[in-house]
Image (cartoon, rainbow, N blue to C red; front, side, top):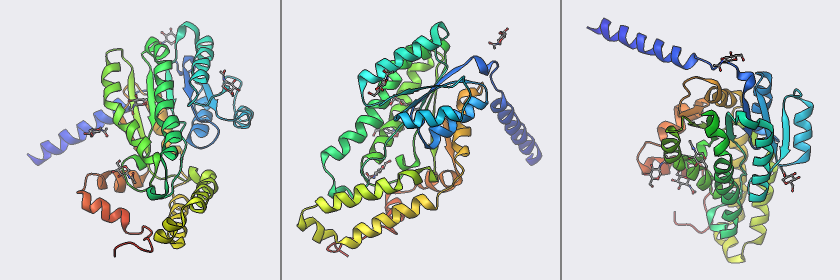
Length: 318
Ligand SMILES: *[C@@H]1O[C@H](CO)[C@@H](O)[C@H](O)[C@H]1NC(C)=O
Ligand SMILES: *[C@@H]1O[C@H](CO)[C@@H](O)[C@H](O)[C@H]1NC(C)=O
Ligand SMILES: *[C@@H]1O[C@H](CO)[C@@H](O)[C@H](O)[C@H]1NC(C)=O
Ligand SMILES: *[C@@H]1O[C@H](CO)[C@@H](O)[C@H](O)[C@H]1NC(C)=O
Ligand SMILES: *[C@@H]1O[C@H](CO)[C@@H](O)[C@H](O)[C@H]1NC(C)=O
C-alpha cells in the first residue's frame, strides 16, 4: 500500500519535473519587452535573455541606464527611454515596440519597473507620498499592460509581473507595500480573462534581495528629509531614536539580503520560455520558507513577528 503511494508520488514528481522542463522552440524569434532595466532585476534579466538569443526590447528610466546596458549586450537588444507613469510616453513606446515587432507581435512583457517610494512610518506621511508611488507602481503598470495587450494577444504570449514579498508582509510601511499588494490582487482577473486568448500571466514574488543596495542611500535620505519636515509635536511623540532604528532596520534588511538575483531572473526566464509556465513563482529561500508560510498564520502572530524588532515611539503606550 505505502509502496504504491510512494511510486505514485515519485511518478507525479517526475511528471511535474518533465512538464516544467519543456522549453519552447525558436526562442530567437521571440520579442520580449522589459520595463525598468537601468539596474536590479530588469538589468540582469535583459542581459540574461539577450544571451539566450531572445530579442530584448529594454526600457530604462534614464539615458545613462540605457547606454550602459547597450555596452554590455549584443546588437539584438534595443533600448528606449520610458517613464511608465507618463501615459503619452507609454503610448509612444508602444508605437516603437509595434514598429519593431511588426506583424509578429510581442511574445513577452515583463512588468518590472517600480519605485520604492517613501518608506518612513505611516504617521509621518501625507497623501502625496502615496500618489507618486501608486501612479508608477500601479497605474503605470496597468497602463503598460493594457497598451501592449493587443501585441501580446497576437502571439498568445506571456505577461510576467514582478511583485515583491513586501506585498505579503507588513514589513515596510508606505505606498510600496500597498502598490505591490494591488498588483497581486489584480492577477486573478487578468489571468482569467486572458486565458481565453491563450495569453499566460505569471507573477514572480522575490524574497529580499540586495538589489535594493543601490537605492538604500536614497531611501535613508528621503526618510531623513521627512523627519526634518515633521511638526515639532510629531517629532516629540516619535523621538529621534525612532528614525535611527527605522533606518537601521531598513539597512539591515537590505544588506543581509541574498545577492543571488539570478534566482529571480531564472523564474522570469522560465515564465517566458517554458511550454507550461507556473502562475506563481517565489524566488529565494526566505520567501519560500519564511514569508509565504508566515502570511498564512493568524494576524496576531504576523503582527508579533513584524513588531518584534520594530522601532518604538518615545511617547507610545508600553
Ligand atoms: C521554428 O522555426 C522553424 C524554421 O523557421 C519552423 O519550421 C518551425 O515551425 C518553428 N517552430 C515553431 C514551434 O514555431
Ligand atoms: C519618453 O520620454 C522620454 C523623456 O521625455 C524621451 O526621451 C523618450 O524618447 C520618450 N520615448 C518615446 C518612445 O517616445
Ligand atoms: C502591507 O501589506 C499587507 C498586506 O499584504 C498589509 O496587511 C499590511 O498592513 C501592509 N502594511 C502596511 C504598513 O501598510
Ligand atoms: C484581493 O482582494 C480580495 C478582497 O479583499 C481578497 O479576498 C483576495 O485575497 C485578494 N487577492 C489577492 C491575490 O491578494
Ligand atoms: C500584472 O499587472 C497588471 C497591471 O497591473 C494586472 O492587471 C495583472 O493582473 C497583473 N498580473 C499578475 C499575475 O499579477
